[in-house]
Image (cartoon, rainbow, N blue to C red):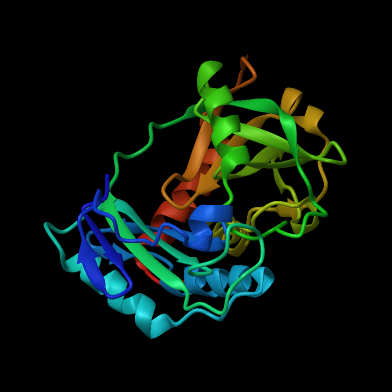
Amino acid sequence: MANAVWVNGRLVEAGDPAVPALDHGVIVGDGAFETAKIVDGQVFASTRHMDRMDHTLKGLGLSALDRARLQEGVEAVLAAGEPIAFGRLRYTVTGGVGPLGSDRLDSDPTYVVAAGPQQPFPDSVAITTVPWTRNERAATAGLKTTSYADNVIALSYAHEHGASEAIFANTRGELCEGTGSNIFVVVDGVLLTPPADSGLLLGITRALTIEWCREEGLEVREQALPMDILATCDEVFITSTTRDVLPVHAVDGREIAAPGPVSARAREIFTRLGAERLDP
């Protein structure tokens, strides 16, 4: 639950009505969002998250992010209540009030910012593949939109199968991503991860993991990977805003060492450099 919520210039209670009933984000999921990690009351990688929000808004055909307006909301929710030692900041921008369909009106966008604490993830997790695909040719491929029904369904499936994350293939049968994470595998000591054209969302943590591991001398390749690599690879980990680098101990029931040596090294690199670089 969020500690504080800010909507279009005012703080509101989490359960109070604050967004118009005909907001296009409510009607058809016409909006973009970002989730950033909060550590000791500060937002990690703030600039990268805002840059990605602009990329999504452009892809949706919405106005560029008003960063000053957003920052007002961020400061308001972070100042409300006790400082957050570890948690998440979520901000959403929608197309504003719209019709009962996919057309848009010439409306001002709706800005929503929320923040709250979160429990850290365990040291390792189980993941499962799902029977649905990401469409790498979709209009929204690579965009962080509020249309998340596919992810809700897949994550529910994962939980029903004793896993904490669901992993999608794309329509070509290649390894793609999780519902809210990117995936890395290790083969013969080399880190491999799906490329941008697989249809994945380019995660902020993914990008930093690639950059920082290369900086520290690890070999990382972005390349198309078959789904069955999950049945033979040596190690697996997933990355996301609040997971950082999170080792995987089981894939579809297959036990894997977690963390393996490369995963442990990647996690150490990310933890160390992430503590040193607040806005990398």
